[in-house]
Image 1 (cartoon, rainbow, N blue to C red):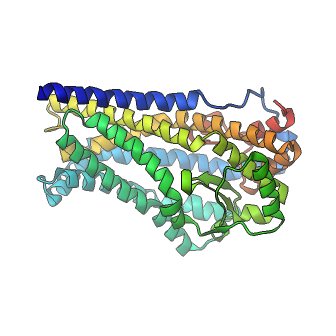
Image 2: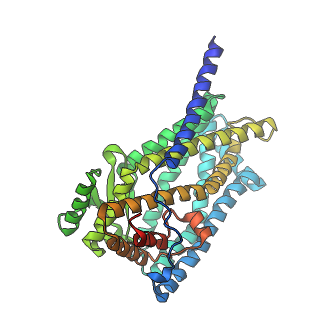
Image 3: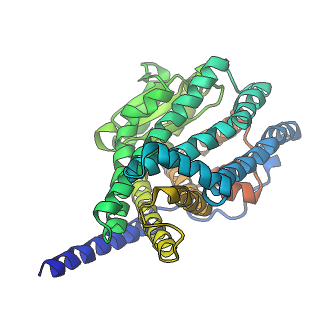
Amino acid sequence: MVLAGRDRWLTVAHLLAGTTVVAGLVAEIARPLAPDVGAPLPAGAWFDDAYLSRAAAFRSPLYVAGLARVAVRVGVACAAAFTPAGRRLTGRIVAAVGEHRPARAAAAAVTAVVVATDVVLVPLEFWATFVHEGAFGLRTQGLAGWAYDWLATRAPSWLAVAVVVAGAVALARRLPRAWPPVAGLAGAVLGIAVTFAAPLVLEPLQFSTRPLPDGPVRAAVERVVARAGGGIDALLVADASRRTTRQNAYVSGLGTTRRVVLYDTLVAQRPPAEVAAVVAHELGHDRHADLWRQGLFAGAGAVVVAYTVAAVTRARTRRGRQRNVTDPRAAPVVLAIVVALTLAALPLQNWVSRRAEAAADLAALDLTAAPDVYARLQEGLTRANLSEPAPPGWATALWATHPAAVARLTMTRRWPL
């Protein structure tokens, strides 16, 4: 009877995990979408040759840098997992922590690889985000500020890696049969929790924020919010100008932490009507529950990763390549699997994001009924951020979370849809 009860709970766990995957897929399939606007107009309809040449000169080396980042992340993970030197280094780390502490040893080994990868990438990151952006006038901070931002961005991820790995190994030892569904479900819940807490815990490491002050901009924004029937609890301005001239905005948080954050560069340099159009776009995300959909989709991914890791580690154990599923000496192999899965999922994740952004663009156009304003906004943001209006398809698949500028501008020409 006890075994039957355990089997019942295991079945329930598998069903819940499967339901999470289905819910994540349905959340992105059955969602508001923008209709196809057809082939985008050529970039020359909005941008002169001088700008297009300058944008290409800025972006083309960054594409190469992006490919180099991917190669380094994959290369370091695979070197740690599959080369004799990597296995020896892992063995030393495990021995130093203690094989009788497999959760801590695995966390130390994986975190060491992640930190080493980030350190190897420092020269590339420094060139791309400090030297290259500075040469094109996008950087405003000095070396000390850049170093602080680099550390503030990565240190939380190092801590998160250590905690997640230690927790996963402890869970696998405690629940040798049930850990894949339980770990996947825990990852899904953790993703939602991080989305909720990010405005309170993570974002302050990047920006200082203040309420959007009274004045023409706030008045224009409040008119748009009132027209939408509310939906945003906080309108904040971030001190982005201390590091960049870029203009941007984003929506973050869930429930009581939900907010729209505007870069101070955007507020200072765009007319009130255009800032209000940005907020209308973010209200579109809120109306479509995009952060919840994103969380469910990420939860589905967490379940897939947990089951994939379980399948690989069990197969390796059966073949004698590791002592057991929780062998800390095999932890870098798990990291290599996660890196590979993350890379393979990038095109899908970006495609999902571009669909959500296009739907938010349409929602903003429908709310403001001002296609000319939205067109000026998109053209202005493209120029301010030195974006390529029509990037290569492969670069779009790998990195573009938003539709190309030509697609967004074409929507304004063909609205109403």
